[in-house]
Image 1 (cartoon, rainbow over the protein chains, first blue to last red):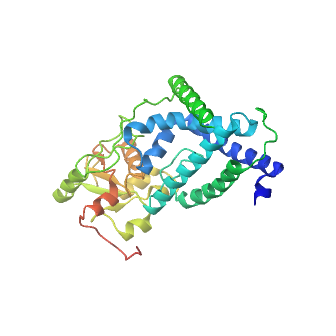
Image 2: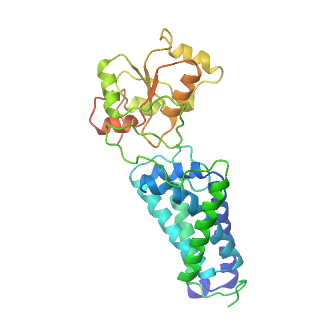
Image 3: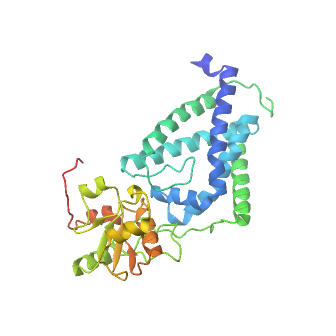
Length: 148
Length: 171
């Protein structure tokens, strides 16, 4: 296992995949904070007064982390944040699934308030978490701009 | 590692707050949402706008139901409608409307119903927008006395009010 997650090429591919997922996920949210706020609201997990602030700031965390991960700048910080975000997304989706909420996950597109994409998104995020955990524990230091 | 994470968070907050300030579709920094229904306050979704018909709470919906002069319109799918709905409600499944002129469809569904009749739209609950979109459609076609019960069937059922089931469904 250790040899696999220390493989420079595997880690490079994972950085690229996870980075692109986070950048891609952030773009619509930045362009349409209202729609993203609504997606958050549907989960009924966050106090109403905080929803907009999260909708405004979180997509930028995703974008910056995605870019940092690919470029290898502020690498450790972005990896820990990406793990944290993925973990929180999984908790939110699992809770929505458990409560039987019929919602769009709000992950990649504006919410339409319908469609049962929760389970699919949950499975996607669990795979994503496996990737991000590999990044967290990997000792590969190749192809980083910050150089170590 | 922690220091880098904090820098990223601060940078994100600054960028997010600044960019939101110049976006044409910016949102207020502090949102005003109600998250949990208590039955006596209407649930109003964040995408409602000021031209929308009024949103009513469960207690008002129940009052209208008991008075019996309002038409309840269930905007959910026929399958959900048959599994349970507000007694006497008619089904206008917004996602499954026939192709063609909507005005003709509404005229056939609401045949003989004056345009100022009290109409209350609802769908499954506050994660569903169909009641809002149906109300907007009805408003556009000239119905003047529409309300939206955004708590929907789930809230109605949760508070133990009378329901009508056309068939038994699992769960």
